[in-house]
Each structure stands twice: as structure tokens, then as C-alpha cells.
Length: 300
Image (cartoon, rainbow, N blue to C red; front, side, top):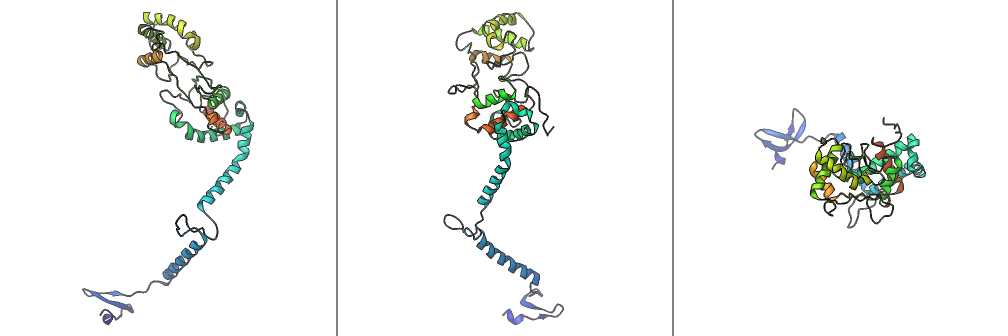
């Protein structure tokens, strides 16, 4: 019936499709030639793509395509190219002792950048993304080092870890649990806390702190030193500054002296390759708390 109503629209010269709505007719205007050819080309391109590249899904995979290209293969090629580009630098870092890396600013900077990436993967879980640490996890940006902050000491700590009892070369120290093991009585511990807070400038000297001084000399000075400034040979912290690993308030110090602390750090020497560990040491050293002469890196 609609074909019977078809006619030529005189103003445009175009045939109508035979439909009418309230006197409005639809024109059968042909598509532009450029649009049609573009459509045909895209169809041809799509068919060609399915021939040359992976396209049609199969039961276990897709058709491979006549060119043999795959995104996985491209990624593997790019990774191999990147590894080949880094290989000379990695070989140079491997051949340089950790404590000598700072003598070569360009190589040191390359190690720092590699260590920065490794830190984000392996260390931020404990030390934080900015390496500022948290309660029980040291801030790596300051100058307060338990075991030493030069390149050699940092590398040693990373390789052998801290308090890994199954590893002979690990960093090892043991603070007695003075209260739990009955070495000191609660009132003695309170006197000792008062003395520690006095030498850390959190409390004014008084009679209780004076009693704690004698207790400190008898029980703590062997590791922390007679003046309380610590001893890196034992990983004993400096008690006279304002930097605390667990906290320097009265309650936290009481807990520390009563039950002791024994934080553990993994030995990365068995988890990461030697070059990556060395680059981690360079990055930690570069954060600002590294000791000895600093290297002026390219980023400064």
C-alpha cells in the first residue's frame, strides 16, 4: 500500500518512501557517496584485520593471524629491549662495592632510581611511601640510626636483616624484659622511666629520676652507654634525643622496659638479587639521613 503512495517531491526532486504523518512525508534521500565508500572501506579493513591479526575467538584461544603478532609478544619484546638498555648500568652497579657507589655520582643516581622503584614494591608496607616510618618501623629520612647510616652499614642491614635467628650474620640485639622476667620491680621501672624522660628533656630532674640514674647505670648503660646516647654495635637507640621508635611517653616507656621490644626486619639478601639490594641501599642513603659525605645527585 505504501508503494502506491510514492511520488516525487517536486521542491527537492527526491522520491518519497510513501509514508505520511499529518501531511508530513518522508523523503528517500540516498546516503552521500563519501559516506558509503567509507563504510565499505571499514568493512574491508575489518575483514583484513581478522586475517592478519588475532581476532576470532576459539575454544582455548583466538585465531593467531597470518602475521603472528600478539600483545603478549610485543610486551615481551619491549621488556627485553628495556633489559638490554639497563644491562650495562646494572653490570656496573654489580661490580661496584656498595660503599664505593657514592664515589661515582652518575652511577649512584642510577642506583637511587632503581632503588626507588624497588622500595615501592618491597618496603612501603612497613616504612611508608615516604619512608617516614610509623610506630615500630624506623623513619629512614632522619639521622637516627640504630645500626649505622653509611652505605656499608645500610647495605649490611638490608642483606642480613634484623633479628633473623636462623641467619648467622643477621643484626642481633636483645633487650631484657625487666618487668616480665622479674629483673626489676614496678617501682624501680617507674624510677627508670623517670630518668630516661629526664635525659631526653621531657621531665625535670627529681628524686625519682635520681633513683633511676643508679638503676640505669646498673642495668642499661652496658648497651645504651653511660650517657644514654646509644651504641650501634648492639643496635641500642640514643635515649637523649626526641626520636622514638615506639614512643617516649611514660606509658610507652613503661611497656618497653617491662616487656622489651624485638622488632624484626627481613633479610632481603635471600629475597632480592644482589644488585636490587645494593640499589635499595643507595636509595635509603639518598633520603637525607645517610651519613658520611653526601653525593650531589642530578635531581638536586
